[in-house]
Image 1 (tube, rainbow, N blue to C red):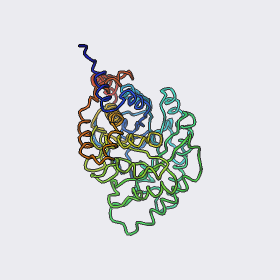
Image 2: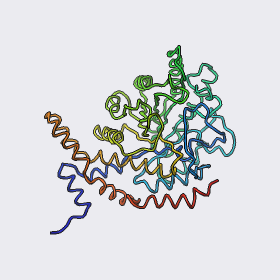
Image 3: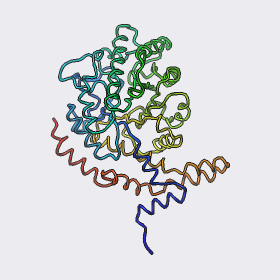
Image 4: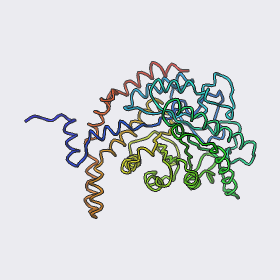
Length: 418
């Protein structure tokens, strides 16, 4: 009797339940994750300032090797990409421009400050996504930007938002792939407000100004991102989920669902099918909240799997963008990228290997016992064998070997940074 190879055996196991494993892996190869640059330098950026006033952010840890320049960040990203199977994207904040050591106000930034990023991305064959930076600036020190009472401060941030859309348009145009331009602002009150309405009216007007110019969706896609609370805005956030849900529907914008921006018992998985029919598309920011929006490195847990399944069950690949959003300075920063991105890809692979039609048939027949039984049996299917095969086909290490490369890179490159 001839013994099957582990790969053939795994493929046969999925075939028995009606799943074409090789087709699933081909679909996976077409999915791109937008990898966030700010994990690599603890959300410092390259404007030459210190600290991040008015950010609502907290990056903790002091692991050695933080990237201090664009070149160092590029090197770290390239190392991470070399250990992640597939072709992906890089997500930038406006504060990461190539300002050549000169102070440039945020309302004056332009595409020239990102020429180097565009050239680098084209060389690597990756797409770029973008975010205005509405934090880490003296005019955001009180935690207010687009909803600020002071009209001159609002204008500054409106101009910044409009400049960023121009930059994103150029990125998408030159790279040949639509650039997702995502707006998040920290505006809110630490304690209970007397007036919840006026700040939201100001935010609406500011956003309408920013989006007043139409661009080719083949170059730029616009999204808005909510938050449950932030540091210094624990009691009231102007840009709540409900606010941006209404705004995205009425203004036909993508809605960003950040996994860490909801109550601890909420997941974004159920929101996907609830919202997708009413907006042009969804942007997912995948992170892992622990007790609060702590933006831990993405883990292959039930929340992540359910999110991946909802994307795949609805076949929402064309109208859903997937990005990562965590920052952990207690770990090797390159390893954090690799772990988080590979876990997102593993979750998508497992979702693509789900026997969707069979599960739906059991559900339609009212056979909920059979549905549950099959879902539980799926947990022990040989996903690991297919993941190893997928990594090998993409010329990256599988389960073994990639951490050895990280440790070597840390010793030879990152630990030499002082």
